[in-house]
Length: 423
Image (cartoon, rainbow, N blue to C red; front, side, top):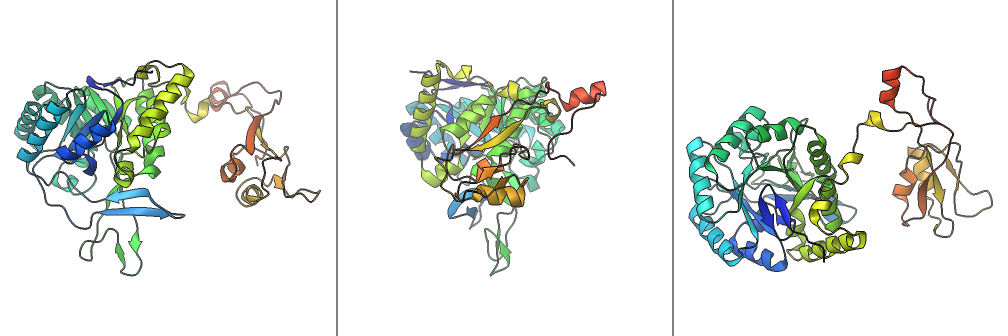
């Protein structure tokens, strides 16, 4: 059986699956039930000066009958007394000594950081996560993303935490920036043991077109909130990979953002995450989703001969390059498996209206379209819209040209051949 043990900056857990700091990790009873279900760790819902939340506080994107593809919240940090949280952290850690409990923190002053870190460690925290990402409510008070968007402030407060902490410190980064790398490097300069990303994206989830109020509504008003759920995964993957591939960044990563199953988690691991955190999918489906995540990852590793999780961490990073390093002379065309085609012709519509007009009706009267390979540019759109798995494949075709990149062209001043479809 593969070893799923995870080590993120010195925080060790029996598997890489953690609850993110959010409603599913709001109390001792919840975290204990999650550990019973199989979660390897939990990031406790952010502690700080308790606040009062609003009602309503959640919203969701509905797309083609599916609810929760994108999720939005205007909830803030814990609204429960700190004494209650610390007591439950202590009780949970005592009951589950092999599981990782990471305490998320957000306060303002140096002295407040010193005090709350000491109390968290006294309660048994295995690690701390500094919440520099919340995009609503707390940032207006000078915390959350107000810190995460300013590298110098990030570095300074991280330095405070490392001065006071005896356990590993992770910095949770905000995605509400143009480039994540300077912010990861700021956490590194501050002495962080690792980073976690992404936090939620500043957003408005939708508008009530009858009441003329954005969602979710609070007494006839609303505000921007934090966007999460499956829809944000591509953004989170990009930011994770951007840090992993940066030559100056050397910290472990806990990946967050749109993870719904083991495959999603594996993508983060392959792009450099040694642990992954899940929130929205647990809110929608419950703690037991981790059972399939564990089984899926174990099966994948067994089938491919991986014995330890760390053998997978970052394995896809070398293949992530700049556009200018891609081979401009690599060529593919679409091929349709006539035996699998159901004749829906969605590929033909998509190609004619949204791509390169190379898929046409079959002259023999069949519902299976034909492809003009000379006009096909290998854009993949037909494959994306096809409802039948493996019916359309993208096949490399030899063209007699040697590999060439745009960066090589710029450096050498060479003339590259014009591509098919170029104007």
